[in-house]
Length: 118
Image 1 (cartoon, one colour):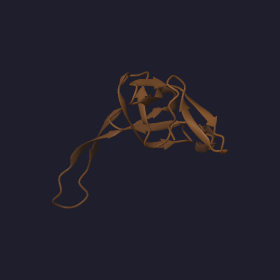
Image 2 (cartoon, helix red, strand yellow):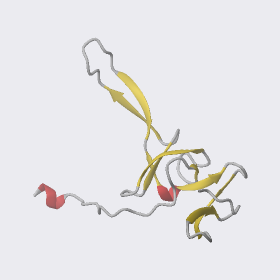
Image 3 (cartoon, one colour):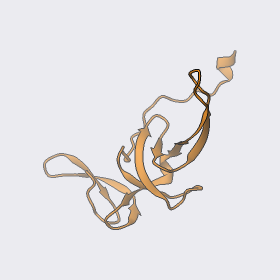
Image 4 (cartoon, one colour):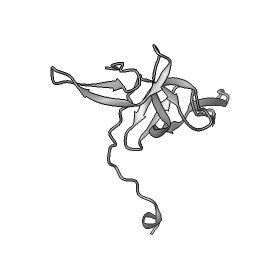
């Protein structure tokens, strides 16, 4: 009975144009305007974890005898629609487009600046 009432998430991966290591700018929410590096992506949930953004406080109990408990600040995920790729050279956030190269490979390009990312 408990399983029938729970909301079931779909396990479909969402194609994301943001990857680990990209510099992004937050475009909405409490951290709007801040920039940071993507630490990891969660494609099933369409979310990203950005360094220094959406910090949450977690209380950690001691695990061994003699150890004290501590308070840890860690990044929580942000929905991918709330971030845009950020050009560190031009200091501007932009949408991303996929471009086919002459050699057949696909590259990501910023729409505002035309800068290739990969």
